[in-house]
Amino acid sequence: MADLPAASDPTRIAEVKAWLSSQFDAVGKDVPEFEYTPRAVAYLHNLATLSQSKTHASSIVANDFRIKASEYRSQAARIREILENAGLAQESLQANVVASAQVLANVANLLNVRDTESSSFLVAMGDISLRKTGVEEKRAKVQKEFKVLLDFTRKAIARLTYLKRTLAQLEDDVAPCEAQMENWNTNLHVIASKEQQYLQQHANYKAMLNRRGYTPDISHGVLVQMAEHRKELEKTTKPIMDTLRSYQDLPPDKALAALAIEDKKRQYAAAEKYLEDVLQSALATSE
Image 1 (cartoon, rainbow, N blue to C red):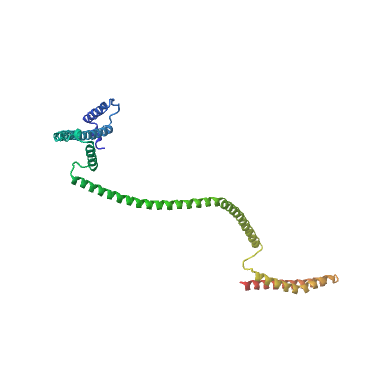
Image 2: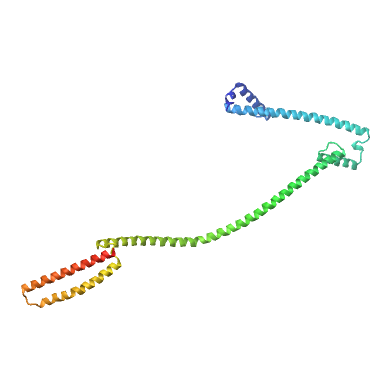
C-alpha cells in the first residue's frame, strides 16, 4: 500500500508502457488497452523489474555458455590437430577402438568425469557406491513403512467389513424395533389415559368423602369399634321398641298414652346420648 502513491509517477508509467511494448512486440502483438491505475502500475512495475533482472541474469549465463563453447571448440580443434599429427585421427582408427572410446566417453559423461585418470573414475565409482547405499537404505525404510501401511490397511479393511456387517444387522433390526416402539407408544398413550381417569376418580371419591364428613382420623379399627357399639345399642333399644309396639294395643286413653310416649322419648333420648358418648370416646381413643 505504501507504493501506491509512487505508482502514479509518470516515469514509472512510461517504464511500464515501454516494457509492455517490448514484450508484446517480441511476439508480434499489440498491447491491450486498459486503465493504468496506481495498483496496476505498481504491480506491472514490480513485474517489469523482476523480468528485466531475470533477463539480464540469463543474458550473462548465455554469454558465459557461449564463451565456454567457443573455448571447448578451440580445445577440440587443438586436440584433433594433435591426434592427427600423432596418426590417431578418428578416420585412421579401427572400428573397435572408436567404439571403445565412445563407450569410455559415455561412461565419463555418466559419472560426470572430465578426464581419463583412473583416480577420477575410482572417485566417481565410490560416489556411485555411496549413493547406491543411500538408495538401498531409503528403499529398506520405504519397504518397512510399506509393511506397516499394509498391515494398517488390512486391519482397516477388517474393521470396515465388521462395521458393514454391524450396519446390515442394525438395518435388519430397524423394522422390529420400530414396531416395538410403536407398541410402546400406544401403551404409553393408554397408560396416560388411564392415569387421567384414575386421577379423576380419586378426586371424585375424595370430594364424596369430604361431603360425607370423612376425616383421616376415621380408620378401619374405629369403624369396626363403632359397628360393635351400634350392635350393642340395637340390642339395648330393641326391648324399648318392642314395648312401644305393644302400646299400640292399649286402649285409647289419651292421658296414659301421652305419659307412656313421654317416658319412651326420655329413654330414646338417653339411648341417643349414650351412643354419642360412645362414638366420642371411640374417636378420642383412636387419636
